Image (cartoon, rainbow over all chains, first blue to last red; front, side, top):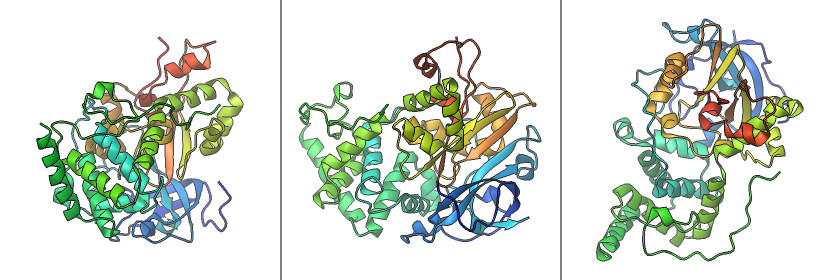
Length: 98
Length: 104
Length: 223
């Protein structure tokens, strides 16, 4: 995995996943939209699947991050430890600094 | 907007543990999709195939089992790509049914 | 050590007239079975049309099936057993899963592999809520329950209840990390090596690492 040039975020950064509701193929589950999290790692840069899904090449590649969210920040009546987390992969264009 | 596959967190029932080993036709379908796509012919990519499944009408989508979903998504995608039509598939399926009857 | 062996078999493939699945050589052409349902027939129709139109060949399909057959949880178990016995390999595995399994002859293809490590304080569980992404290259085909609506819906929201259904109760002191494999990464859980396996060979260790352990719904057992 090569270094990602011009990645906007770094591990440990506090971010928020956009509360966007666009049509079409997206890989951000509804349960994760609008949630606060922290960057767990930069996964690398990949072509955008939202574009690839419709036959485009998805270039230029975009940085993909693993975002760690506290379960209690997602589910109002989460049953488990307060320290439990949910981690998923979010492209840079879905993230803003929190 | 929640597409029919975006189900994380929705209420659901117990997880059935009794599964099945894939039927030969399910393995064949898996191999066909992979071969037409990323593994060989590169007619489509994985994202397109996912999208084609998600594009199925929600009521229809929810009535299908896993490999039935794959079958319909794949036919639609291949039709979109101009590779074959649903009519051709249905017509050939009818022929195959006849072939099977004749060998009984 | 090369895991994938792609040499062709040096015996003949005849299309059998009978459909006894028990005797099917795995690399024979898959035939329509008696009492085939409409989906099985549709899939064969699709296959015939694609071959006739020159999109793919029967040989292409056979090669894909052959490769699929080599992908089983035994591969993942070998990776885990090596990590348990080789601390330097384990470090490399946790830093870059894709590169580490490539050392063992396992090619990830377009996906990247991330290894998540269990410990006495942390437990990991994997899902793909949006479809059924799964580290097929090290685990083979996913089981029905992993692909099921109920698992995919519930494990992100109530993972401890799901684990309990699988017979595992986590203490409150253990942090549960649930990973939704929603983009280009694939995940393998590195379970904790159980007590009672001191001095075991890698083969002995691999034998107790089940697929369910590597998805995060079970623990390997020494006894």
